[in-house]
Each structure stands twice: as C-alpha cells, then as structure tokens.
Image 1 (cartoon, rainbow, N blue to C red):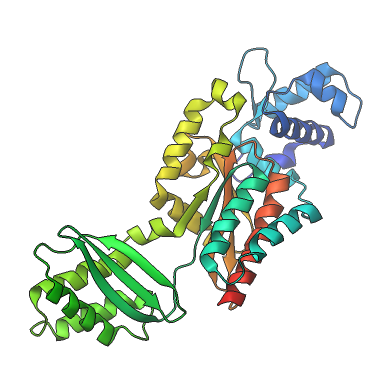
Image 2: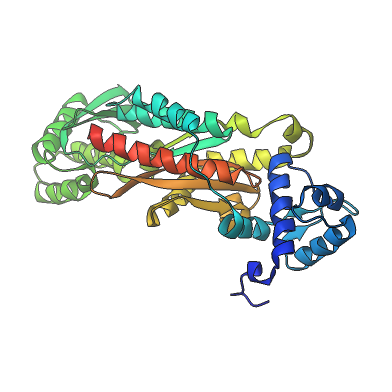
Length: 354
C-alpha cells in the first residue's frame, strides 16, 4: 500500500460493513469489539470465524488494533480518520437540539460576551464534552484609553471602543511611575488613537513616540509602551479562548483506567496559547473540521479529538471558531452537525449585533 492509497479502496462491501459496525460499536461503548458481537449485528449473515478473518485483514491494513491478547479490536487513529472521511453518516441536526441552541443564545442577543459564554455552555451541555470558543478580536475604533494605578507594581489600562465595549487589563508599569506620568501617557494616547482599531494601535503609537520622543517624559513613554504591549503581545490570545466543561471528560469508566490520559488533556487545555494556535487552523477554510489524536502535537499524548468550525461576520470574513474536544471515540455523527449549526448561528448573531 503506497502513502497515497486510500485504504477504503482496498475494502470490499463485506469488509466495509464489518469495519463500519465495529467503529460504531466502539464509539458507543468505548470497549473492544469481538467477532461474535459483530456477527450478530451485520446486515449479511456470516459466521464469527469469517468476521475474525476480516478483522485480521483490517488490522493488517492498520485500521484496527488489538489492545490485549484474545480481546476484541478497536479502531486505530488511521481507522477513525478513514471512518470520519469516508463512512461517517452525518444527518441533519434534530429539531430538539436546534431549538436548545437557539433558545440558549438568543436570550443574550446583543451582548457579544454573553453570547460567546452561552455558546460554550450549550456546546458542553449538548455534547458532554469540553467546549472551546475562540472569540473574535475587536476591530472597533478606539474611543478612549486610561491608566489607573493600583500599586507600585500593578496598574490597570482601560480601553473603550466606539461600539461601547470596555476592556480592563492588568499590567506591570515601569518602576517609579507617578500620577502625572500616567496622566501624560493617557493624554498622549487619546490624542492619537481615536479612529484607529486595536490591531493598528501598536504601529500608530510607535510612530508617534518617535516623532514626540523629546516632548514625552521618559517615564510616560515607558508607561505607554508597556500599556500598549498588553494588547500587542501573545497574552491577548489567552483572553480570547473560552473553555467550558472539562469535567465532562471524566466519568466512572475513565477514573478506573484512563485517568492519566485525562490529566494529559487537562494539561493541554491549560496551555491556552497552543490551543488558540490549534483552533486557528479552522480559520483556513469553511465548514467543520475533525482532528483526531496525534494529528496535532497538542493531542499526541492525550489521545483526544477536536471537532471545530469557524464562524464568520456579515462580510463572510472568518472571525473566530467554536469546537468540542473529547476522547477519540466521540460521536462524530452527532457532534459534527451540532458544531456546524452553532458556528453558523454565532456568526449570524454577532453580525446582527455589530
């Protein structure tokens, strides 16, 4: 078998039926599937011995593995990828699920922060997985900036945008900052930033500092640069990721034999910066995408999958993403339409709000 060969092309109808039923049973139970169990559920009446031979062929192709001697088989990551890409039957989202999503989100229509928070809650509740929501970066023009001293080592920068949103972020000011330096810094910024978006802020400030370097007190200049960096560095991405429902990933079965995998997954979720980078893969194309296990370095240890979809604004520009993370035996047929519909609804609601 060459690297470009799709294993599904090597399967006859019987092998496909055995493979599909085995994966569906594994997704439902999480347990290895034996030949006797499969022989009773197949469309074609064949013996358990024949099923065993088919399973051996599937194992030779790398689609199945046997976790224990004389045990049943489970799909490999390659097998799950083949199932999702070639055999998964994705149906329309049931009306009851659609109504739950709509009711949950429409209650907060007009409040972007609440919509996104409720999105994570409803996704977690419906899928029994951990929900991830990548919030859009603010592109509204800046209206006002203010610095507030909390202590010699801590200060607050307050940013107000033209659409009425207010963001407060803590940062470490330069040593020796004074009330007059903070006022000078705020006055300088407010004179130049109005009408510019957050993504433009860093370049505008850098140009103006260079032009007015002699006029600006050194302390005020340092304060401006450190305050602007709060929005300009990678820390911004940490604020953009909403995670809800990690506890759904632990159940009675998991506690017994899979706790280390869950610990690894929780460690992954804590590395939010990497998660944001991973979710942004969804921004490279429309529609729902499925990442299984070690297909990404983030899940190489935890053996988990992510179902993720971008959402768009009124101009059809991708501005964020929603997703569900869980074990590789996720019910993909149910979760894919949930994630897809939720992403469409979030995009529409945020466009109407804007």
